[in-house]
Length: 68
Image (cartoon, rainbow, N blue to C red; front, side):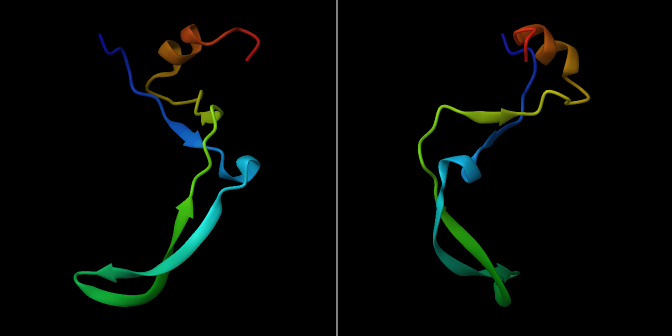
């Protein structure tokens, strides 16, 4: 059974993920002057966990070891 959802973030800074290229952002089928990065994510078992999620705090805190 699913109890709650969690928010995990990949740690690009510490594992040194690289930007492969940039591509233009389109809005309503029109190319804008803004660009978006295409990132090559390195594999890692480490992630950031948002433990202060307002809606799921009790479920998340009950699951984690007390030393975290």
